[in-house]
Amino acid sequence: MKKLISLPAHYDGENIILDTPFELKLNDKLLVTVLSSSDESDDKSEWLNASINQLNRAYTEEEPQYSQAMIKESNPEYKK
Image (cartoon, rainbow, N blue to C red; front, side, top):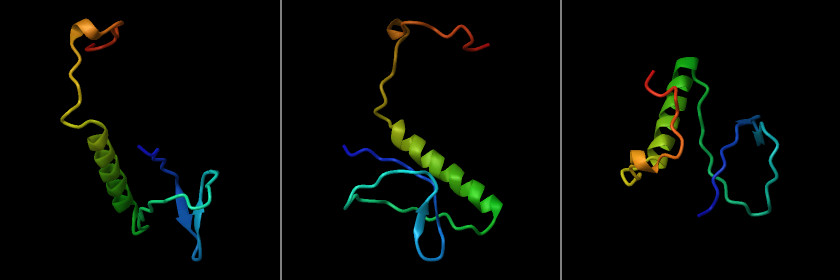
């Protein structure tokens, strides 16, 4: 499986500019997601939706259930 990395970027009117330094190799494949800058409330909603989608991809129905016996060290602050 190929490694997926998300990087902040912006469009300057001519080019897409990465906001974080990152070395790209020749012919690297890119996925571009455009977040329109309409207004702040739309931006927040878009980020929340993107976060939910990524969490849904990370924690699928096939996520294993961990029993109490599998826990090596419990968190003493849990359920306080």
